View 1 (cartoon, rainbow, N blue to C red):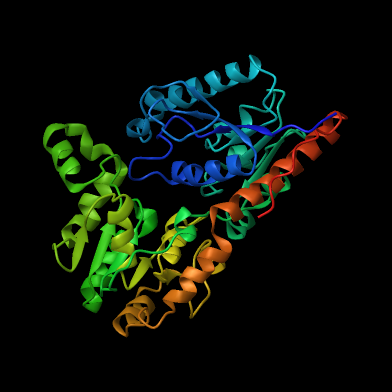
View 2: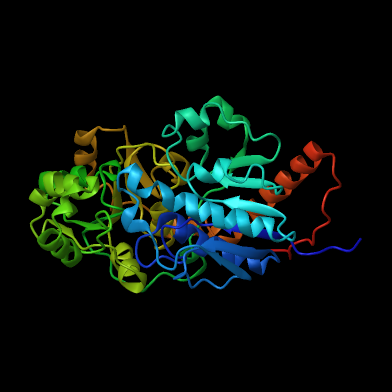
Length: 399
C-alpha cells in the first residue's frame, strides 16, 4: 500500500479567529503551528469561526463570528456555545472517513467530546491543570484519547489520571524566531505583554514601577476590550461591562496606579507596533501570580532580543537561562524583584543570547516536528488498542 499525507482535524474552538485580531493565546499558537505542519506535508482541516483567515486545506465552521465576548458570561448563558461547536465537529467526523486524527485545543470539552468519534485524539493542554479536578482526576481515554502539555512544569502538577494519558510536552513557538528582530534602540521601559488579569500580575508590575522609579507599559486586553477607548465606551454605555471579573479587577487594582508616564496601559497591540514596543524594552516583566503553563509572550520576547525578569513560577525556569536570558526571584517576593529592578539587573542580560535561544528552541519548525512525533505516537497507540494495522504515512521533509 502506498503512503499518503496525514490528515488532521485541528479544533481551535469557537472563541476567536485564527489568526486572532490582537490578543489570542491558543489561536496565535495555531496560526504559528498550522502553516509549518502543512509545509511538512500534513493536510489540515481547521474547526474555527467564520472570520478565520488562515490558509488551510479545509475549514469547518459553526459560528460566523467569534464568541470570545461571551466566554466569561454565567455558565447558563454560555454553555451552549462550546456544545454547538463540538456538535458541528462531530457531524463533520461522521460524514467523512479521511480524518486520521483530531488535534483538539478546546478546554475540557476537547478531552471528552471526541472519545467515541472513531478517530484517535491528541488534546493539547494550554491552561492550569488544577482547574477541572472532577474531569482530570478521573479521566480515562480508553486507548483513543491522549494529551500533551506545553511545558514540563505544567504536566508535573497534573492529576495522576491525566498524567497517565500525557505523552510529553511541546514548548510553544513564535514565527519571530525565524526573522530578524526590528532595528531599534533599546529604551529604559519594561513591558508586560499579557492579558490584563490577576494571574499575570499587572497590579504588582504597576506597584514596582512606582517603587523603583522605572517605567512600565502594560500591553494586553482587559476582558473583551482591546484598548482604552473600547473599555471607556463599554463603561459609558453598558451597565454590565463592570460585571466582567477582569474589568472589575482592573478598575479596582490597576487603574488607580496608571499615571500615563510611570505606568501606562496601551491595550492589545499587533504586528509591528507590538514588536517594536517589546524589542525596545529593557526587559519583559513577569510577576506571575499563577503557574504559567506555556509562556507565548516569553518566547516572543526572547525572539525580539528582550530578556525576561519575574518570579520563578510555572514554565519560566525551563524557558529561560538564568543570568543570560532572564533573571528570576522566588515567587511573590516583591521586595527581591524591586531590588533587582532598582539595581538595573535586567540591563546586564544578553540580548544576543535571547535571540539565539529562540532560534534554537522556539521556532515553528521545532514545534511542528514535536507535534508530528506526538501524532505518530497517538496513531501507534490507538492502532494497538484497536488491534488495527498502522497507517502508512508519508515522511515529512528533512529540516
